[in-house]
Length: 192
Image (tube, rainbow, N blue to C red; front, side, top):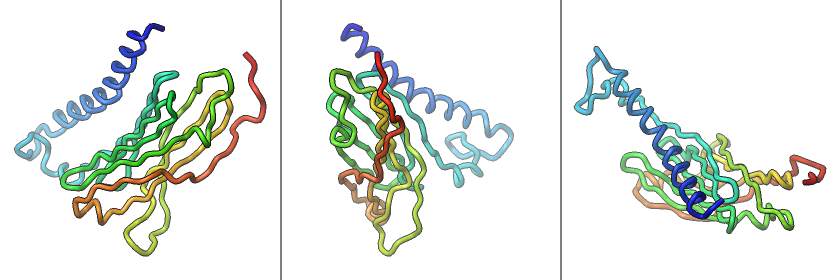
């Protein structure tokens, strides 16, 4: 595949991944409030107090990049990206309203090294994560990111520490991912 086609495919995929959910949500909300009290923006007033966007999606372009979204807490979502070439994993925190965001980073190559002679074939998803309340404001975020290499069958899960109080005070956070577990989903080698 030519470099132009790979780049076009990446841009198209990212545009689709972000544009489609936003467009559908706007259309749904625009048509929802017919015949009810609405706010200045046209959204039913009763909906605004209860509306909570909970993004959860995943997509990737083989050999290049994968993207997933997940809830960090009830006031922030995370956009997780995995660069197949470098192994860099990052999460950009997208805050809601007045809350602060942040950035978390790591590299998966130590935990999921690619098979010799093959380009990695990574999959990425997020899942809800909840632990009992602990003392203090720092706690695990509400999402765990799972990454698998379809070539080797290796799987790794990463979490991150999130301080809701810092976010509420307008302080952006940053840090490293914490490895939660690794395992093999496949015990045999595949031949080509």
